[in-house]
Image (cartoon, rainbow, N blue to C red):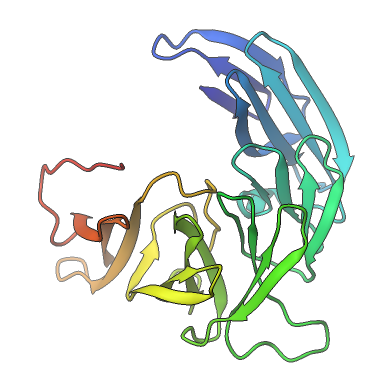
Length: 286
């Protein structure tokens, strides 16, 4: 197990819990993302913490034999440490990262060197690494141009070359929600009406841009609201979604939610939490 905090990173052996390797992280840095590179090797990316944001990041590598290295690299603009969870996204093997610094930039995961600029603009720009290395990004209108009538998706290859650009006419205007990838090349896409509610979620085949399934009233149950998928790649056909059930009768001020387990390989849907769930039923994430 690889554990990172503001003062260090460590490998622990499971199930014993014995620490087998550790490295110190200098003061003033906050972990943003971490990935295993291979068996016994991991990498973490950090952004400056505290009140004085700096336009730089740090990457630290640690091996189970205790070997460690770190380097600091410049970025285009400081990443807000409060919103660091959406400022840095790493691919599944830690070789590439996306940074949200005065636009969305593809960088080398080891050095932070820029590879390509994928989108311009400020604020959140949703993106997702697919299991095969392609990158999905919310399309943005050029500066001075009117916004798109419907959400758009830009598709890039591993080195940031644009492969496709398609519109989602079944989705209303709003911030695009991207992910998870539920099968190779098939991704859940939706439009956010507000900061919590994802409406009209669709399963889209990226190669054809065609809609293969609809998930009305459901939104992915991972991470923070409006965050892209935290773990890239379709490692499992099973994914969890939330459904808003409105206000409760006992506590009218509280919203009721259901959690629905969907196996996209078989099509099975099952309520596993909230109204309609079987009490004591065992939940499988596989």
